[in-house]
Every structure is written in structure tokens, then in C-alpha cells.
Image (cartoon, rainbow over all chains, first blue to last red; front, side, top):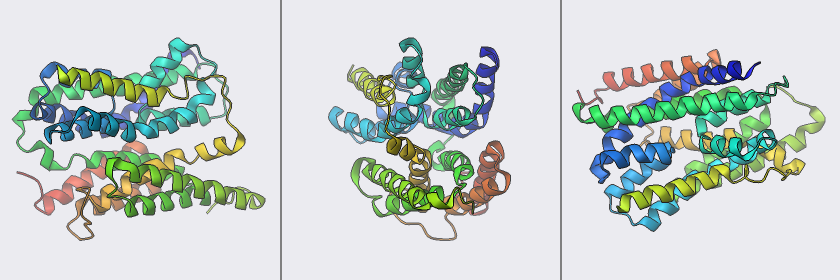
Length: 236
Length: 109
């Protein structure tokens, strides 16, 4: 595919994810004021940081009067999973010059990662897959900034916006990403172990339970894959 | 002013995690690491979703019939298994969730 085809395919494949991210951008835009961010800072955080969960947690911690050190540490821990995404995609972007790798890294969200790694997993050897990555990243970025703006401008018009439970959109999005990946026993086992570990450690501070769960799931997945190798990719 | 320091600090930290491995194009991972990375999306996203369904407020278990997060979450999983279609999963899941919240009188209207 040509560059433009890849770019627009990336945009298009991202559309369902945009639906899932919209409520978050809107709620963030409407809540940031209460945490003491002015309008420019609210937009500025979406433009510069571009990390939904970290922005959310920052706003709620700010409302509770947390210090800068706590806010930054929390940002780091919440975003550590992005280092795993970065490692996963590195083999596919290592041939690109820095002027590509840096912006693509900036746009590496959960959603972009899910969509882009599926593109790289397809076996065709299109040399323009990074344009797909760019399209997916920009779609998410534009959507996030636009929704922040909507929340900022109109959020106060809807009473109790936070009480609607719009955060379910994240659950629906991630379910839609994960379920199609559960194609073999090691993947299913990784999911189950990650879920149980996350539940056991849910009250650890700074989302450390999430990292523990991720590592437990990965270890079990790999162990099972090695144990199963003689049986080949057995489908269940 | 403090808020801008916060924002630029968050920018640096977030970008550092995302760029961490893109920054080293010559690094080649051993086979074991590459194998492990196949499980990253499954493990990370499941570890976010399941607690969000069972402990919607982040603290208290909500194993009950009026927990719309859990019921709609299970329905969303069912849609995903049957359709394997992302938009149907997200759209259908949201519809069921808000339908349930409405039926259970949990919407602030």
C-alpha cells in the first residue's frame, strides 16, 4: 500500500477506539478546572502529556492536594506499561530515523499500540507501515484534544458528568482489544493469571498491582508456550 | 505556574517511558524477551479491565446484581467473543451498560 493508503487505513482502523476514548477526554476536560488547572493548562496537559489515565489520576490527586513528587512518581508508575509497548514495537520501527521514532513514541497510547501491533503482525511486507502508525496516532491525538475542549467548554452544562459511569467506555475498549487475542492456551492463561494477580494486589499504592499482574501474566504465558511447544499451536 | 511545572514534568516522564526502547534502534532482544512481549497487551489490558469490573470504585468489591460494570462487562466480553468486531463490542457494550444503569436507577437524571 502507498503512504497515503496506509495513513488513512490507520485513521480508519482507529475510529472504534475514538468512540471509547471520547467520554474520557470529555470528563477530563470538565474535571480539570476543579483541580485548579486553568483552561490553557487543561488543554496544555492533553496536548503535551497525552496520556489519559495519567491525566485522570493527576487531576484527582491534585484535587486531593498531592505534592509534585507524588504526582510525578504516580505518572511514572501508571505509564510504565508504555515501556513494554515501546519494547514490543521497537523491532518494527528500529529502521526509521529519529525524526520518525520520536513523534511515533509520543503518540504511543494503549489504543494506538493495540491497533498498530496488529498491522505489524500482518505478514505483507509493506514498507510504509509507519504511515499507518502515524495515522492511528494522529487520529487518537486529535480526538483527545477535541474531547478535552468539549469537556472544558460544555462539561459544566451537564450536571454530575462524573456520576454517569462513562469510564465504562475504557472497559469496553480494552475488552474489544483483548478478546480477539485470546486464540491459544498460553494467551488465555496469561489473561487469567493477570486478572487474578491484579485482583489480589488491587490495593497496592500507585497501581503497582498492575505491574505485578502484567509480569505474572507474561511469565505464565511464556512458560506455558514453552511447555506446549511440542504440541504446536494447539487451538482451544 | 506550578501547574505548568507539573505538566512539563509529566510530559518528560510519559515521553521517556514511550520512547524508552525506540531510543535504542541497535538493540536486539533475545528470543525469550521477544516471546514475552507477545503477552504484553493481553496481560496489561486484562489487569486493568477485570478489577475495573469487580471493584468499580477502585476499593470495594462489588459482587452483586446491581453492579452494571460487572454485568455489562460480561455482556461486552460475550459480544466480543461472538462478533470479534471492535466497533460492535465498544458500541454494544456501552449501550448495554447505560441501559442497565438506567434500568437500575443509577443515572443522575
